[in-house]
Length: 560
Image 1: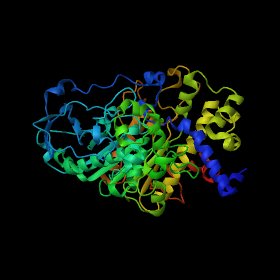
Image 2 (image 1 turned 90 degrees about the vertical axis):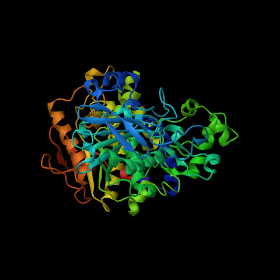
Image 3 (image 1 turned 120 degrees about the vertical axis):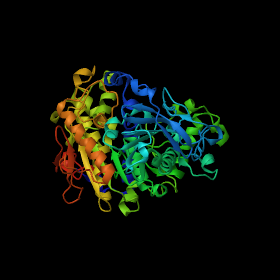
Image 4 (image 1 turned 60 degrees about the vertical axis):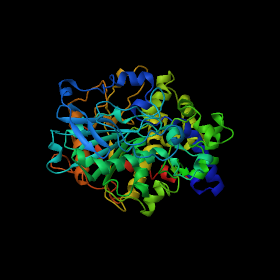
């Protein structure tokens, strides 16, 4: 059955490139809730976005702070001070498009930090003048932030496939209420943030990973300024989900991020970067010229926007909306030689990474939401064996389809959508995450989890056209950590899980250890024990069957 493992080098390369091409269309959907959901799914899952202008009677108060860029005033939300839309970089527009971000410097007068700044350019919203961050400070009193011990800081990197999302999409109140400062950021997205092209890359500046450079500049801003808000620059935890988790793995591997954070949390960021048969982070020279099955070449992108001359001047003259109109649904970082000198997988294998305590994990049913969007919500649910066969070939190609159908037979699942979701979860997210845990844990304390609430909102009955439960889908855990505007409230059992998760995350931010007297013990990951913390309502438990549940060593880690 596993003859693929023993083929020639050429056959392995053919299989790998074929699989990558087949998976490309579906992997293009990976993103965070606001970016990923189709109109139908998003409309039933979310409320109207929270206004960025004040919060009721707290609006009369004007908390003020003096940063290195100058003084600013925010707004009060209960006892939390919110400082919104703080510029941390010069707008990367005109000749500064596709250049490393530059510190904003000083502003004139008193900055009104009571409104969010623009999101970065993406479908339906945003602009290139978007490099803003938001700071949420608990128990803020006039001058009170200057007294007592410095608070832990949590630095949130949003998801969205590196093509969408914004810091303003996430209300971190549940975390802030536990006594941590939370910073949320915007960073350049899409081809404006992740672009490898020979003329631009020949200008002599750091290149390719502009969005990751933005993240690092924002981290440097925190190092220089968070003390003014009462935060501890020596106790910063970076955390992110989906593309934000992908970013966290990249920052762990980045030599230019050394010293900018003390802990890291990666949620569902393992997709297609820790599997043997899929590696989406490629050398920048390859991305400039040929690309691969997951990464279009910069030369081809330039041609597609009318810049067959391949000049930087032509490309900088293309509108921001036209640039993003030709990008795929998901982008990835590059090995650029400076910010990333090797892939995260290679860095974690050798131990050549920023060795800080880490929480990392995935959700039990990551891929179901993508199946729902591609099939059910398009009016084409997978209801027969034939339809399932076709869907497996489309996703995994004819090279892997027989193996996938043997291990994930249609008859063994409640629906074709659940079956396809299982193989997608295992092959794209779960086993890669476990591979990363095994590498990381050889060098640093690593806490591994699986989010396992099979009844996470929304219920199937509330999504028109859905033929199966979404289970613990990609991004489902966010509603247990943030206020993100879901219509559906957590039940009592789920609220208890939410409290445990918030406790784990914030205790980890404070100490590098998620454990406290109020939560079940979470032991660090060890390869020989291979245990994960199962985040299941009402109370997390230890899970020992992750490997077999997700067919990791029995199949996915054998695919060449």
